[in-house]
Image 1: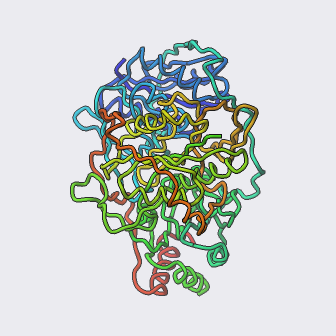
Image 2 (image 1 turned 45 degrees about the vertical axis):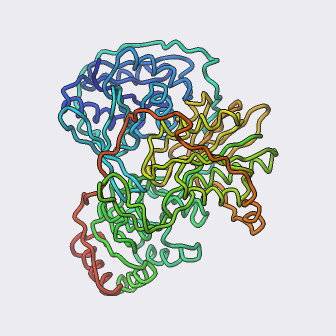
Image 3 (image 1 turned 135 degrees about the vertical axis):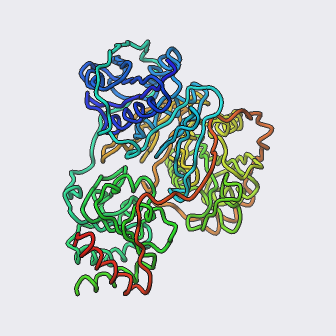
Length: 323
Length: 256
């Protein structure tokens, strides 16, 4: 088909929210490279979700339907997708950058002797070839990445790189495929999904959030930032390392493994701004960054910033708010 | 259980990094190096598993000569021995070519469990573990919080998105990538540091592993990201800076 193939993720018939952004990426790149756009969705009993995908402007939807794909396994998904890619020979295979894709897409690419460009944040078309942008060194630098050798080329698309509201509606044919899978091909046995605790804090509902990161150095210092949260009437949140250390409960974590928030004011204190954190908060209306490193990536998304020692800046801000 | 933990040496976390003059990688001078943090958690998980079920922990590291320091530190923490794939390239390596080298270096080892961190702090591809599993023909699981022995295999706790988890049962041999932060990291003891000096480090020149090939992706250019937003940065003393910030928040953004 030599087009663009978007491999979409669903669970129990519900599309993952990043699936639509990846479909939008495929449509946009399809226009830029003048290529056909196709979608594939693996699962079991996925007629309804395939029809939903068929409501967008695509050349075809491949519904890979098999009992052995009911529960996700890297072996099952790879065995189902590899023959499809070999048969249709797309130029580009795009995935949403989800935990599940991180689990199987590198395996699938390796099985086809390729390397996936993971975590793509933007792109440009250059003389009919795609240049992808991804971050290095936890967001300190960006890199332009090009593919070498023959297609297919594999890439996973980070949240926010493409907008799902740009999706073009249409009517696509659905081809239902029963992949040739045997239970002995699937070596791992996934058990039930579970959550450890009910979430008592809904950061998504907070209008102001003060979030703290590694820069706070010690658990005792959390109080410094709590005072700022109190002065602003804000919920206190944190980046992953703070919650991993047990300095704040997991339910206060913002980022790809925590909550996604979009308050009217987000104050990031001592947070460098790795992509995993940024995807959870960059939709905030106003972002303030306080960090001692002027190169910290958090300043790229900040509306207002102060470069300085948080142990001086934060107490001074609490004083200023009282005035 | 014979456990291999693959680790990487990366620039120390607080290093001031600069892009090199050819814009292909970072300037390789003026900063320290340390174990990639997620790999430190993989090593810790490997050492804890060995303490529970007995066996051996072998550290595998590809890198130039300076990586020897990070290998010694892993041995000082309790790894039994190490394999150092000696590369001369200080720059980034293609993860598929690297995984093939690692698989070759492990051919004589026949590990039951291969572990590594879920991603590196420098390239951050988050793929080397999964690629290595495929190259070695092993089943794998990623972003693992906990590993326990279960019959002839293992049962691992996988982190999923949005606060969800899942247990996965796997046969051995297998490969897992380990999530950071699930446990506390140990420090090397004085005795450990002393012992590390006598532990075996098998050095394998990368060229001997015959895994060279054409990379299928290449880094074209590295640069400091352009700001997507027009940020206003406030200077002066802490008091002056926050004075300006609070005024903007009140009268320009009108969010407080």
